[in-house]
Image (cartoon, rainbow, N blue to C red):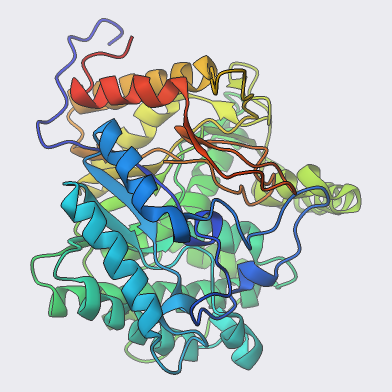
Length: 472
């Protein structure tokens, strides 16, 4: 397998990159926009908030021109629910409709296909205050109304839609403070909301395509022990398969339901829920990938102890242990064979190939990579130069893995790494940069917000122009 003669990328391959509204737009309270949970969330000490970010709201024409200069075939971005319906369930905001119409028109004018994420973490704060957000079934109805407004206003030009970004990350980690029943009940509501969005899309926009967009990765056992192998199977189900099996097959995996049953969790499932889930058919699978996961078996007692110790430490330790520990099943652990970025994120291009293979072989739906990137501090040098060879090396290896997966028989639609331009990272602010374009600001000094092309900008332009043939 090592000496494969690689197939070329498809001629219509969607080369591009991604952003999200709350991390790139800024203008958090302008032109009638309501507050989202991300607008009011506490941020780590020493990092900026999401009020200004990259000010894409006021620079979108300049930003789209840069994407066009790179030769983008697509651009994946999200729509802020609170720009469209400021309080989540009330009046439609014409200024919000106008902004996204202008952005979409600018993309279409530059022959860039818009790929729109309908929900990227930014629940209207008003709905969180009113009824607890996703904890209530009412959120299903409000989300469906919002997405129907998007389909009605933008569906004549947007033909690729994504339902909910990284639902599994919200459930696994961002549901802190919830017990197991509350966490998976909110998850059930999100799955129903996603299903309603897919059904509505096919009803209103018969030529459009819609997909879930979880964060998916291959799960390795830490050793060849049977316990660790079983732990990798169990964790794969909790982290990956539970979300995609429901989206594609319309039902929960049996072992997941037993996992809940063993812990005394009885989900409130109403008559018609499974019919709704089964009626929703995704047209493809979008997913975010940032490296493989390695797990070992951990007992309930040891798992709860590890999570308590990590919570006491806080910060990155709490995040990583909380994200990768399921007492009685599995715990994430370091993989000595895996290189890491300066922020500790794994660099695992072979894992991307394995993930693509697993997704294709299980679901047999076209795949679209919607995030994959190297987030590290960049240095702006004299003469407005940003030499980010580390980012080029990272992307080159992962693009090569994509080509290997295509050669393996995977139907891969496109590659949309994170991120198109620098934006504010959820946990590390603007210091952790991912973009092909440098935004000239620091955590608290906005400077002049100039857009500066990094070395990776010119490299990716060459990759796109050659349809992936020239990776040097």
